[in-house]
Length: 368
Image (cartoon, rainbow, N blue to C red; front, side):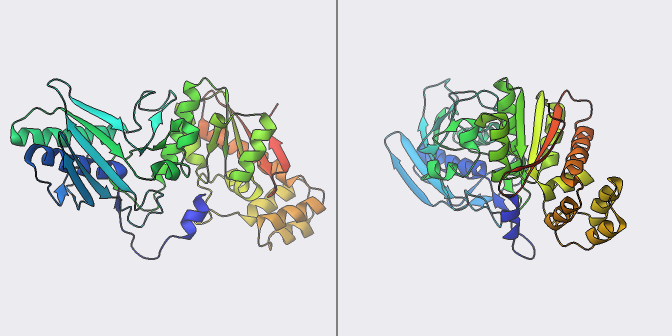
């Protein structure tokens, strides 16, 4: 989850890396040039969508009758990317005149099986921007040597199917491997853009499937609990992590009729306070806020004073519960209010489900 990744963040300035889309483009360009000339450019320079022109060293090359192959090892910089160190391979073959540039999923690259993603079902999981980057690289080299830009690009990642089990791909209906991703070509360390991107694609798939109810959960325990509580299919489960804002803002513009937000008491307290990024490095539980809730519920001055000195949200919950105050229920109600405010007037009925560390229900608000 997000907390685990952030805890491994190295100190000091962080090094940027390259997306799988950039790596595939470099490998495809090198292979295409070798197919036309018999020689692999190494390093090979590509142009990214924002105009940068990085150079990539080739890891392996090979060629045969009518085909050429090159690979680039992905360097994600200091980002904890599951594809860091993966070998991105492109095998290029010339096609007949008028065929254009065609993409094929090789070993370790997934195939789209559900509607709602930016690529149609049945297509290789190579996203639009990487496709455009590779197409432009093919056209650039073709123009340089005076030939037509007609090629089949087969992208593969050895071991990609196993790596994909650590991603959202199986849940999104992308089977058989990884996706080739990236909108800028650059990986910004700890930006969490890929996580938020996955949340958005999960919503897109749920909408395309006609689902009426989705659940955003902060972790595995709350996800299992909310799935059991509402009998939801896997396709309805959105691994929100700490990014409540990323989920709610996208649903505001791409609504699903019903949303359940599920999580533990501490993270839902942050949401109740108005925080939309629930990570411990970017928001914290406000003891004064908890004290105000307790006072509002009729808690004694002694209890409010004790709450001001607690070390953890769990300790605050235990103290309030011992005094008979429904603190979890109040937090759930305030969290629902925060969510509704972010959703604005979007046609999304939102409810909140708070569980303990074992997944047992503590409170619900807005259900029924």
